[in-house]
Image 1: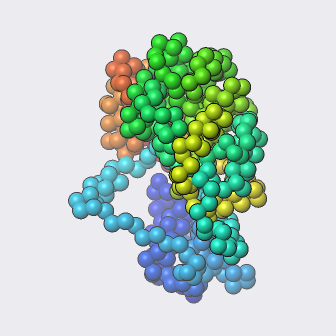
Image 2: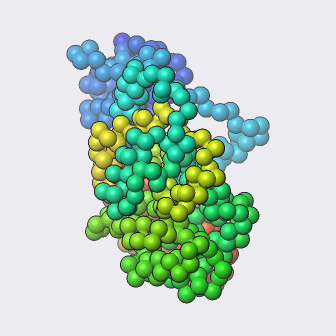
Length: 471
Protein backbone atom coordinates (compact mmCIF):
# COMPACT_ATOMS: atom_id res chain seq x y z
CA UNK A 1 0.00 0.00 0.00
CA UNK A 2 1.24 3.48 -0.77
CA UNK A 3 1.67 5.03 2.70
CA UNK A 4 2.24 8.45 1.27
CA UNK A 5 5.43 9.63 0.44
CA UNK A 6 2.50 11.34 -1.37
CA UNK A 7 3.72 14.85 -0.71
CA UNK A 8 0.48 16.75 -1.16
CA UNK A 9 0.76 20.35 -0.15
CA UNK A 10 -2.81 21.53 0.35
CA UNK A 11 -3.47 25.24 0.19
CA UNK A 12 -6.82 26.22 1.75
CA UNK A 13 -6.62 29.66 0.12
CA UNK A 14 -5.97 28.20 -3.33
CA UNK A 15 -8.64 28.95 -5.96
CA UNK A 16 -9.15 25.18 -6.25
CA UNK A 17 -11.06 23.26 -3.62
CA UNK A 18 -9.23 20.81 -1.36
CA UNK A 19 -10.78 17.81 -3.08
CA UNK A 20 -9.67 19.14 -6.47
CA UNK A 21 -6.10 19.52 -5.20
CA UNK A 22 -6.07 15.92 -3.93
CA UNK A 23 -7.68 14.65 -7.14
CA UNK A 24 -5.21 16.47 -9.40
CA UNK A 25 -2.17 15.35 -7.41
CA UNK A 26 -3.10 11.64 -7.50
CA UNK A 27 -4.13 11.87 -11.16
CA UNK A 28 -0.77 13.39 -12.10
CA UNK A 29 1.10 10.77 -10.05
CA UNK A 30 -0.67 8.06 -12.05
CA UNK A 31 -0.06 9.76 -15.39
CA UNK A 32 3.67 10.16 -14.74
CA UNK A 33 4.04 6.58 -13.50
CA UNK A 34 4.88 7.49 -9.90
CA UNK A 35 1.88 5.40 -8.87
CA UNK A 36 2.01 2.06 -10.64
CA UNK A 37 -0.81 -0.06 -12.03
CA UNK A 38 -2.61 -2.21 -9.46
CA UNK A 39 -0.90 -0.29 -6.65
CA UNK A 40 -3.10 0.12 -3.63
CA UNK A 41 -3.79 3.60 -2.29
CA UNK A 42 -4.37 4.54 1.35
CA UNK A 43 -7.89 4.23 2.69
CA UNK A 44 -10.02 7.38 2.62
CA UNK A 45 -9.97 7.46 6.44
CA UNK A 46 -6.18 7.18 6.60
CA UNK A 47 -5.62 9.84 3.92
CA UNK A 48 -8.10 12.21 5.59
CA UNK A 49 -6.24 11.89 8.91
CA UNK A 50 -2.87 12.25 7.19
CA UNK A 51 -3.89 15.44 5.38
CA UNK A 52 -6.02 16.79 8.24
CA UNK A 53 -9.10 17.18 6.06
CA UNK A 54 -12.61 15.74 6.26
CA UNK A 55 -13.34 12.19 5.13
CA UNK A 56 -15.91 13.62 2.69
CA UNK A 57 -13.22 15.66 0.93
CA UNK A 58 -11.10 12.55 0.29
CA UNK A 59 -14.16 10.51 -0.74
CA UNK A 60 -15.03 13.14 -3.37
CA UNK A 61 -11.48 13.03 -4.80
CA UNK A 62 -11.45 9.22 -4.89
CA UNK A 63 -14.94 9.07 -6.44
CA UNK A 64 -13.87 11.42 -9.22
CA UNK A 65 -10.74 9.36 -9.92
CA UNK A 66 -12.83 6.19 -10.05
CA UNK A 67 -15.40 7.75 -12.38
CA UNK A 68 -12.62 8.86 -14.76
CA UNK A 69 -11.03 5.41 -14.75
CA UNK A 70 -7.79 6.28 -12.94
CA UNK A 71 -8.68 4.21 -9.88
CA UNK A 72 -10.62 1.02 -9.37
CA UNK A 73 -12.66 0.50 -6.17
CA UNK A 74 -12.53 -3.13 -5.06
CA UNK A 75 -15.14 -4.13 -2.46
CA UNK A 76 -13.66 -4.66 1.03
CA UNK A 77 -10.14 -4.21 -0.35
CA UNK A 78 -9.79 -0.51 -1.16
CA UNK A 79 -8.68 1.66 -4.08
CA UNK A 80 -6.20 0.49 -6.71
CA UNK A 81 -4.59 2.18 -9.72
CA UNK A 82 -6.31 0.95 -12.87
CA UNK A 83 -4.45 -1.41 -15.18
CA UNK A 84 -2.75 0.50 -18.00
CA UNK A 85 -4.51 -1.35 -20.77
CA UNK A 86 -7.78 -0.13 -19.28
CA UNK A 87 -6.58 3.38 -18.60
CA UNK A 88 -6.75 5.97 -21.33
CA UNK A 89 -3.82 8.32 -20.71
CA UNK A 90 -3.29 10.86 -23.48
CA UNK A 91 0.17 12.36 -23.74
CA UNK A 92 0.16 16.11 -24.05
CA UNK A 93 1.33 17.49 -27.40
CA UNK A 94 4.66 19.24 -26.84
CA UNK A 95 4.41 22.98 -27.41
CA UNK A 96 6.08 24.57 -30.40
CA UNK A 97 9.48 26.06 -29.78
CA UNK A 98 9.25 29.46 -28.15
CA UNK A 99 5.61 29.14 -27.01
CA UNK A 100 6.14 27.25 -23.72
CA UNK A 101 7.35 30.26 -21.76
CA UNK A 102 4.64 32.48 -23.25
CA UNK A 103 1.90 29.98 -22.34
CA UNK A 104 3.31 29.62 -18.83
CA UNK A 105 3.25 33.39 -18.35
CA UNK A 106 -0.34 33.50 -19.62
CA UNK A 107 -1.39 30.80 -17.13
CA UNK A 108 0.44 32.63 -14.37
CA UNK A 109 -1.33 35.89 -15.14
CA UNK A 110 -4.88 34.48 -15.46
CA UNK A 111 -6.38 32.82 -12.40
CA UNK A 112 -10.06 32.97 -13.41
CA UNK A 113 -11.20 32.53 -17.01
CA UNK A 114 -14.86 33.46 -17.54
CA UNK A 115 -15.00 31.75 -20.93
CA UNK A 116 -18.51 31.65 -22.46
CA UNK A 117 -17.68 28.51 -24.47
CA UNK A 118 -16.04 26.27 -21.85
CA UNK A 119 -18.15 23.66 -20.05
CA UNK A 120 -17.86 21.75 -16.78
CA UNK A 121 -16.45 18.26 -17.40
CA UNK A 122 -15.99 17.33 -13.73
CA UNK A 123 -19.31 15.50 -13.62
CA UNK A 124 -19.15 13.70 -16.94
CA UNK A 125 -20.02 10.00 -16.43
CA UNK A 126 -16.68 8.66 -17.64
CA UNK A 127 -17.27 5.22 -16.14
CA UNK A 128 -20.62 4.89 -17.93
CA UNK A 129 -19.16 6.00 -21.27
CA UNK A 130 -16.31 3.55 -20.81
CA UNK A 131 -18.70 0.71 -19.94
CA UNK A 132 -20.84 1.37 -23.03
CA UNK A 133 -17.71 1.45 -25.21
CA UNK A 134 -16.53 -1.88 -23.83
CA UNK A 135 -19.92 -3.52 -24.30
CA UNK A 136 -20.18 -2.32 -27.89
CA UNK A 137 -16.67 -3.55 -28.70
CA UNK A 138 -17.45 -6.96 -27.17
CA UNK A 139 -20.56 -7.30 -29.32
CA UNK A 140 -19.05 -5.68 -32.41
CA UNK A 141 -18.93 -7.51 -35.71
CA UNK A 142 -17.55 -6.69 -39.13
CA UNK A 143 -20.62 -4.57 -39.90
CA UNK A 144 -19.65 -2.13 -37.14
CA UNK A 145 -16.39 -1.38 -38.95
CA UNK A 146 -17.86 -0.96 -42.42
CA UNK A 147 -18.34 2.46 -44.01
CA UNK A 148 -21.97 3.01 -43.06
CA UNK A 149 -24.59 5.39 -44.47
CA UNK A 150 -23.55 8.88 -45.64
CA UNK A 151 -26.24 10.52 -43.48
CA UNK A 152 -25.22 8.56 -40.39
CA UNK A 153 -26.50 5.29 -38.96
CA UNK A 154 -30.25 4.93 -39.05
CA UNK A 155 -30.42 3.87 -35.40
CA UNK A 156 -28.83 7.10 -34.17
CA UNK A 157 -30.90 9.21 -36.57
CA UNK A 158 -34.08 7.61 -35.20
CA UNK A 159 -32.93 8.30 -31.64
CA UNK A 160 -32.09 11.93 -32.45
CA UNK A 161 -35.44 12.31 -34.18
CA UNK A 162 -37.32 11.19 -31.06
CA UNK A 163 -35.14 13.34 -28.80
CA UNK A 164 -35.65 16.49 -30.89
CA UNK A 165 -39.40 16.03 -31.05
CA UNK A 166 -39.71 15.52 -27.30
CA UNK A 167 -37.29 18.22 -26.18
CA UNK A 168 -37.39 20.89 -28.90
CA UNK A 169 -40.68 20.27 -30.72
CA UNK A 170 -38.81 19.61 -33.98
CA UNK A 171 -41.00 17.87 -36.57
CA UNK A 172 -38.95 15.58 -38.77
CA UNK A 173 -38.33 12.04 -39.97
CA UNK A 174 -35.00 10.16 -39.61
CA UNK A 175 -34.47 10.45 -43.37
CA UNK A 176 -34.20 14.26 -42.98
CA UNK A 177 -31.31 14.07 -40.52
CA UNK A 178 -27.67 14.30 -41.54
CA UNK A 179 -25.02 13.54 -38.90
CA UNK A 180 -21.61 15.17 -39.11
CA UNK A 181 -18.43 15.80 -37.12
CA UNK A 182 -19.24 19.25 -35.78
CA UNK A 183 -21.30 22.22 -36.95
CA UNK A 184 -18.39 23.40 -39.10
CA UNK A 185 -18.68 20.35 -41.33
CA UNK A 186 -22.45 20.73 -41.63
CA UNK A 187 -22.13 24.37 -42.68
CA UNK A 188 -19.59 23.37 -45.33
CA UNK A 189 -21.99 20.66 -46.49
CA UNK A 190 -24.73 23.27 -46.83
CA UNK A 191 -22.55 25.10 -49.34
CA UNK A 192 -22.91 22.08 -51.64
CA UNK A 193 -26.66 21.86 -50.99
CA UNK A 194 -27.57 25.54 -51.33
CA UNK A 195 -25.20 26.21 -54.18
CA UNK A 196 -22.32 28.61 -54.64
CA UNK A 197 -22.29 32.36 -53.99
CA UNK A 198 -25.58 32.30 -52.08
CA UNK A 199 -26.24 35.62 -50.35
CA UNK A 200 -26.41 35.02 -46.57
CA UNK A 201 -27.68 37.35 -43.83
CA UNK A 202 -26.37 37.10 -40.26
CA UNK A 203 -27.02 38.85 -36.98
CA UNK A 204 -24.38 41.29 -35.77
CA UNK A 205 -22.86 40.43 -33.28
CA UNK A 206 -22.84 36.75 -34.16
CA UNK A 207 -21.02 33.42 -34.03
CA UNK A 208 -17.77 34.49 -35.68
CA UNK A 209 -16.70 31.00 -36.74
CA UNK A 210 -19.90 30.57 -38.79
CA UNK A 211 -19.26 33.93 -40.47
CA UNK A 212 -15.74 32.88 -41.42
CA UNK A 213 -16.99 29.58 -42.85
CA UNK A 214 -19.56 31.37 -45.00
CA UNK A 215 -16.92 33.77 -46.24
CA UNK A 216 -14.56 30.87 -47.02
CA UNK A 217 -17.35 29.50 -49.25
CA UNK A 218 -17.31 32.81 -51.15
CA UNK A 219 -20.79 33.66 -49.84
CA UNK A 220 -21.60 37.37 -49.79
CA UNK A 221 -22.72 38.11 -46.22
CA UNK A 222 -24.98 40.95 -45.08
CA UNK A 223 -24.77 41.86 -41.41
CA UNK A 224 -28.18 42.69 -39.94
CA UNK A 225 -28.54 44.82 -36.80
CA UNK A 226 -30.45 43.53 -33.79
CA UNK A 227 -32.87 44.99 -31.30
CA UNK A 228 -34.20 43.60 -28.01
CA UNK A 229 -36.15 40.91 -29.94
CA UNK A 230 -33.31 39.68 -32.12
CA UNK A 231 -32.55 40.16 -35.82
CA UNK A 232 -34.43 43.07 -37.43
CA UNK A 233 -36.55 41.67 -40.25
CA UNK A 234 -37.17 45.15 -41.68
CA UNK A 235 -33.42 45.49 -42.27
CA UNK A 236 -33.25 41.93 -43.61
CA UNK A 237 -35.84 42.85 -46.26
CA UNK A 238 -33.56 45.56 -47.59
CA UNK A 239 -30.98 42.97 -48.65
CA UNK A 240 -30.94 40.39 -51.45
CA UNK A 241 -30.22 37.60 -48.98
CA UNK A 242 -31.56 34.14 -49.80
CA UNK A 243 -30.57 32.59 -46.48
CA UNK A 244 -30.66 33.99 -42.94
CA UNK A 245 -28.52 32.39 -40.21
CA UNK A 246 -30.16 32.91 -36.81
CA UNK A 247 -30.05 31.64 -33.20
CA UNK A 248 -33.61 32.28 -31.97
CA UNK A 249 -33.67 30.31 -28.70
CA UNK A 250 -30.57 31.89 -27.16
CA UNK A 251 -28.59 34.16 -29.46
CA UNK A 252 -24.84 33.96 -29.09
CA UNK A 253 -23.41 36.10 -27.67
CA UNK A 254 -26.20 38.54 -26.72
CA UNK A 255 -28.37 35.94 -24.95
CA UNK A 256 -31.55 37.28 -26.59
CA UNK A 257 -34.48 34.85 -26.85
CA UNK A 258 -36.54 35.69 -29.92
CA UNK A 259 -40.29 36.13 -29.13
CA UNK A 260 -42.98 34.44 -31.19
CA UNK A 261 -43.89 37.63 -33.08
CA UNK A 262 -40.37 38.07 -34.47
CA UNK A 263 -40.19 34.37 -35.31
CA UNK A 264 -43.36 34.64 -37.36
CA UNK A 265 -41.90 37.63 -39.21
CA UNK A 266 -38.84 35.57 -40.10
CA UNK A 267 -40.90 32.61 -41.28
CA UNK A 268 -43.06 34.94 -43.35
CA UNK A 269 -39.94 36.44 -44.99
CA UNK A 270 -38.68 32.95 -45.87
CA UNK A 271 -42.07 31.82 -47.23
CA UNK A 272 -42.30 34.75 -49.65
CA UNK A 273 -39.74 33.18 -52.02
CA UNK A 274 -39.23 29.50 -52.78
CA UNK A 275 -35.44 30.04 -52.80
CA UNK A 276 -35.31 31.49 -49.30
CA UNK A 277 -34.32 29.49 -46.21
CA UNK A 278 -33.52 30.00 -42.54
CA UNK A 279 -30.61 28.24 -40.82
CA UNK A 280 -31.53 27.77 -37.16
CA UNK A 281 -28.45 27.16 -35.02
CA UNK A 282 -29.99 25.91 -31.77
CA UNK A 283 -27.00 26.89 -29.67
CA UNK A 284 -27.07 25.66 -26.01
CA UNK A 285 -30.89 25.53 -26.02
CA UNK A 286 -30.83 22.71 -23.42
CA UNK A 287 -29.82 25.13 -20.68
CA UNK A 288 -32.72 27.36 -19.68
CA UNK A 289 -33.29 28.14 -16.00
CA UNK A 290 -36.58 30.02 -15.83
CA UNK A 291 -39.85 28.73 -17.27
CA UNK A 292 -40.28 26.05 -19.89
CA UNK A 293 -37.76 25.54 -22.72
CA UNK A 294 -38.63 27.59 -25.79
CA UNK A 295 -39.72 25.53 -28.81
CA UNK A 296 -37.48 25.63 -31.83
CA UNK A 297 -38.17 27.88 -34.81
CA UNK A 298 -38.45 24.72 -36.90
CA UNK A 299 -41.42 23.63 -34.78
CA UNK A 300 -43.42 26.58 -36.18
CA UNK A 301 -42.32 26.05 -39.79
CA UNK A 302 -45.12 24.66 -41.99
CA UNK A 303 -43.52 25.47 -45.34
CA UNK A 304 -40.24 23.56 -45.18
CA UNK A 305 -38.09 26.67 -44.84
CA UNK A 306 -35.92 25.93 -41.78
CA UNK A 307 -32.62 24.04 -41.71
CA UNK A 308 -32.20 23.03 -38.07
CA UNK A 309 -28.66 22.48 -36.72
CA UNK A 310 -27.77 21.14 -33.28
CA UNK A 311 -24.81 19.54 -31.50
CA UNK A 312 -23.92 17.32 -28.56
CA UNK A 313 -20.63 19.15 -28.00
CA UNK A 314 -22.17 21.60 -25.54
CA UNK A 315 -24.53 19.20 -23.74
CA UNK A 316 -22.14 16.23 -23.45
CA UNK A 317 -18.50 17.08 -24.25
CA UNK A 318 -16.60 19.09 -26.90
CA UNK A 319 -14.59 16.01 -27.89
CA UNK A 320 -17.78 14.14 -28.89
CA UNK A 321 -17.82 16.14 -32.15
CA UNK A 322 -21.23 14.85 -33.20
CA UNK A 323 -23.65 17.37 -34.68
CA UNK A 324 -26.81 16.94 -36.70
CA UNK A 325 -28.77 18.83 -39.32
CA UNK A 326 -32.47 18.51 -40.17
CA UNK A 327 -33.08 19.33 -43.83
CA UNK A 328 -36.49 20.38 -45.20
CA UNK A 329 -37.59 18.03 -47.99
CA UNK A 330 -36.70 20.34 -50.93
CA UNK A 331 -33.11 20.56 -49.67
CA UNK A 332 -33.05 16.87 -48.80
CA UNK A 333 -33.58 16.08 -52.46
CA UNK A 334 -30.71 18.40 -53.33
CA UNK A 335 -28.51 16.74 -50.71
CA UNK A 336 -29.17 13.31 -52.21
CA UNK A 337 -28.44 14.65 -55.66
CA UNK A 338 -25.11 16.35 -54.98
CA UNK A 339 -23.78 14.92 -51.70
CA UNK A 340 -24.34 11.17 -51.99
CA UNK A 341 -20.62 10.79 -52.72
CA UNK A 342 -19.65 12.17 -49.28
CA UNK A 343 -19.11 9.57 -46.55
CA UNK A 344 -20.17 10.19 -42.96
CA UNK A 345 -17.47 11.98 -40.97
CA UNK A 346 -18.43 10.31 -37.66
CA UNK A 347 -17.21 6.78 -36.97
CA UNK A 348 -19.86 4.11 -36.57
CA UNK A 349 -18.38 3.18 -33.20
CA UNK A 350 -18.87 6.72 -31.86
CA UNK A 351 -22.40 6.78 -33.26
CA UNK A 352 -23.22 3.48 -31.55
CA UNK A 353 -21.87 4.70 -28.20
CA UNK A 354 -23.88 7.92 -28.36
CA UNK A 355 -27.00 6.05 -29.46
CA UNK A 356 -26.86 3.74 -26.45
CA UNK A 357 -25.98 6.62 -24.12
CA UNK A 358 -29.20 8.39 -25.15
CA UNK A 359 -31.45 5.32 -25.48
CA UNK A 360 -30.58 3.93 -22.04
CA UNK A 361 -31.45 7.22 -20.33
CA UNK A 362 -27.92 8.21 -19.36
CA UNK A 363 -28.03 11.38 -21.46
CA UNK A 364 -31.25 12.62 -19.90
CA UNK A 365 -29.96 11.97 -16.38
CA UNK A 366 -26.66 13.67 -17.12
CA UNK A 367 -28.41 16.63 -18.74
CA UNK A 368 -30.72 17.05 -15.75
CA UNK A 369 -27.73 16.95 -13.41
CA UNK A 370 -25.86 19.57 -15.43
CA UNK A 371 -28.93 21.81 -15.72
CA UNK A 372 -29.13 21.82 -11.94
CA UNK A 373 -25.41 22.45 -11.62
CA UNK A 374 -25.35 25.28 -14.16
CA UNK A 375 -28.48 26.82 -12.63
CA UNK A 376 -26.71 26.91 -9.25
CA UNK A 377 -23.70 28.60 -10.84
CA UNK A 378 -25.98 30.98 -12.76
CA UNK A 379 -27.82 32.00 -9.58
CA UNK A 380 -24.56 32.35 -7.64
CA UNK A 381 -23.03 34.58 -10.31
CA UNK A 382 -26.09 36.86 -10.43
CA UNK A 383 -26.06 37.12 -6.64
CA UNK A 384 -22.34 37.93 -6.60
CA UNK A 385 -22.92 40.62 -9.26
CA UNK A 386 -25.47 42.57 -7.21
CA UNK A 387 -22.85 45.12 -6.07
CA UNK A 388 -22.22 45.83 -9.78
CA UNK A 389 -25.75 47.10 -10.47
CA UNK A 390 -24.81 50.78 -10.12
CA UNK A 391 -21.99 50.42 -12.65
CA UNK A 392 -23.40 47.85 -15.08
CA UNK A 393 -26.68 46.67 -16.55
CA UNK A 394 -26.83 42.89 -16.29
CA UNK A 395 -28.64 40.97 -19.03
CA UNK A 396 -28.67 37.74 -21.04
CA UNK A 397 -29.40 35.60 -18.00
CA UNK A 398 -31.88 32.75 -17.45
CA UNK A 399 -30.39 30.68 -20.28
CA UNK A 400 -27.10 29.45 -21.67
CA UNK A 401 -23.87 29.67 -19.69
CA UNK A 402 -22.95 33.33 -19.72
CA UNK A 403 -24.26 36.77 -18.77
CA UNK A 404 -23.61 40.25 -20.17
CA UNK A 405 -22.48 43.32 -18.29
CA UNK A 406 -23.15 46.65 -20.04
CA UNK A 407 -21.20 49.55 -18.60
CA UNK A 408 -23.29 52.62 -17.66
CA UNK A 409 -20.37 54.87 -16.75
CA UNK A 410 -19.12 55.47 -20.28
CA UNK A 411 -15.96 53.43 -19.94
CA UNK A 412 -14.13 51.62 -22.74
CA UNK A 413 -14.33 47.84 -23.33
CA UNK A 414 -10.60 47.54 -23.86
CA UNK A 415 -9.86 49.39 -20.64
CA UNK A 416 -12.26 47.24 -18.60
CA UNK A 417 -10.85 44.02 -20.07
CA UNK A 418 -7.28 45.18 -19.38
CA UNK A 419 -8.13 46.06 -15.77
CA UNK A 420 -9.63 42.60 -15.34
CA UNK A 421 -6.55 40.91 -16.84
CA UNK A 422 -4.26 42.84 -14.52
CA UNK A 423 -6.33 41.43 -11.65
CA UNK A 424 -5.89 37.89 -13.00
CA UNK A 425 -9.35 37.60 -14.56
CA UNK A 426 -10.10 36.94 -18.22
CA UNK A 427 -13.39 38.37 -19.54
CA UNK A 428 -14.60 38.61 -23.13
CA UNK A 429 -15.46 41.77 -25.09
CA UNK A 430 -18.59 42.11 -27.18
CA UNK A 431 -16.55 43.86 -29.88
CA UNK A 432 -14.77 40.55 -30.53
CA UNK A 433 -18.10 39.12 -31.70
CA UNK A 434 -19.00 42.06 -33.94
CA UNK A 435 -18.03 41.62 -37.57
CA UNK A 436 -18.53 45.33 -38.15
CA UNK A 437 -17.30 47.23 -35.13
CA UNK A 438 -19.62 49.73 -33.47
CA UNK A 439 -17.54 52.30 -31.63
CA UNK A 440 -20.67 54.12 -30.43
CA UNK A 441 -22.06 51.08 -28.60
CA UNK A 442 -21.62 51.03 -24.82
CA UNK A 443 -18.96 48.72 -23.43
CA UNK A 444 -20.29 45.16 -23.00
CA UNK A 445 -18.39 42.36 -21.29
CA UNK A 446 -19.26 38.66 -21.41
CA UNK A 447 -18.87 36.48 -18.33
CA UNK A 448 -19.19 32.73 -18.83
CA UNK A 449 -19.45 30.50 -15.80
CA UNK A 450 -19.83 26.98 -17.20
CA UNK A 451 -16.35 25.64 -16.42
CA UNK A 452 -15.74 27.53 -13.17
CA UNK A 453 -16.28 26.12 -9.70
CA UNK A 454 -18.40 27.98 -7.13
CA UNK A 455 -15.24 29.12 -5.35
CA UNK A 456 -13.72 30.38 -8.60
CA UNK A 457 -16.87 32.36 -9.46
CA UNK A 458 -16.83 34.07 -6.05
CA UNK A 459 -13.12 34.82 -6.15
CA UNK A 460 -13.18 36.01 -9.77
CA UNK A 461 -16.10 38.36 -9.21
CA UNK A 462 -14.39 39.70 -6.08
CA UNK A 463 -11.36 40.66 -8.20
CA UNK A 464 -13.60 42.31 -10.81
CA UNK A 465 -15.37 44.26 -8.09
CA UNK A 466 -12.08 45.73 -6.94
CA UNK A 467 -11.12 47.05 -10.38
CA UNK A 468 -14.54 47.79 -11.93
CA UNK A 469 -16.79 48.97 -9.11
CA UNK A 470 -14.87 50.19 -6.10
CA UNK A 471 -13.62 53.72 -6.44
